[in-house]
Amino acid sequence: MKREDLAKEFESGSFDEKLLRVIKGDYPFSETGEINLYVFDFIHAHREEFSQFLFIKYEDLIGSQGGGGDELQKKTIEAIAKRLGVQMTSEKVESISKDLFGDNVVGCTFRKGTINQWEKHFKDEHKQAFEERWLEIQNRLGYSGFASK
Image 1 (spheres, rainbow, N blue to C red):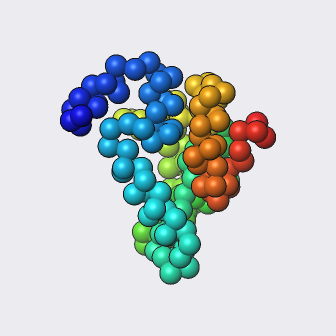
Image 2 (tube, rainbow, N blue to C red):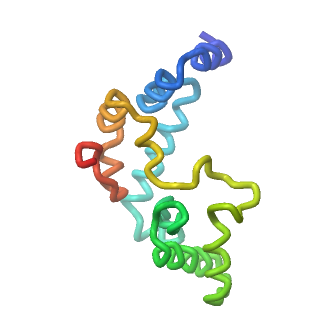
């Protein structure tokens, strides 16, 4: 089947069907996910040698406006600025943190801007499929499994 036909067939499914296929890696162009997983594994295993990488989780950056923590958000903003070689005053960090999420955002990147939105969309079959495929990576990134939710 051609990629275009695979894409059309994928798009014809329901939201739940598409979500399950994406979790399992059964969708058009899914090889990209496998490549990204390989790259993550390699970088994670050699993180001391890849000190130029800064690993940031969404929850580290969201702040209290999105259900996270303000202090962690500010530390993350400071870490990004330091990595980029940008001098940052505490006032500038404060300004950036207030403008990242919420009503002040122009051209918002995030659909909802709050953590744990997956809980509203994942059904038991999605949780099971996700853990079967991604539990090891999930744990290495510091996220607990669904069984603990």
